[in-house]
Image 1 (spheres, rainbow, N blue to C red):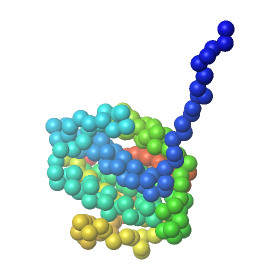
Image 2: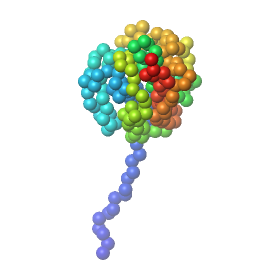
Image 3: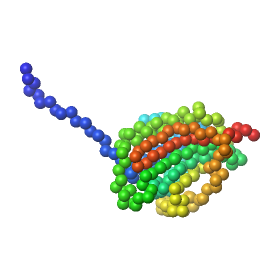
Length: 227
């Protein structure tokens, strides 16, 4: 017998792709979580300083120390305008031993295809990736950070870290936001980011979002742990 109920068409919803500026917002948020998680995994601070959180459905650890959190947040707030301009090339998390020798470095290598375009183009530019896909990629980044300990040697006790940014056009950095002191950015020295010639490289993850690409890798000095 015929079915009196009219069958409803199956609907398929496709998530909208992110704009370039929306992607920059998501990336800054991710970088904050990733920096905290690296500091925890590489034991730069006592484990008690961190608390368990979830990001992109991945368990991570975030610092509870106000001064540390403010430092990280200020760096990323200052970086964001240059990221939106497409002139951020690398964000380094550089780890130094007590003698101020660089022993390990995490590099977030970012490449934007909108560097040469004006603000009007950047405001309307659309990526090729939606929020679900970008979060899946960033989830994989965090999972790689979580296991990078097995690929790197332990750092010496009492290490410190610094965040440094490399711009594609270092002569034209953006002014810091009003709530960030002008002294937030100072020129760095090559010794702060240059490892020895025999340093090893550990690739962790890459992402291609069309207009913006990011790669994360770690490097460690061949002299680490040697007196």
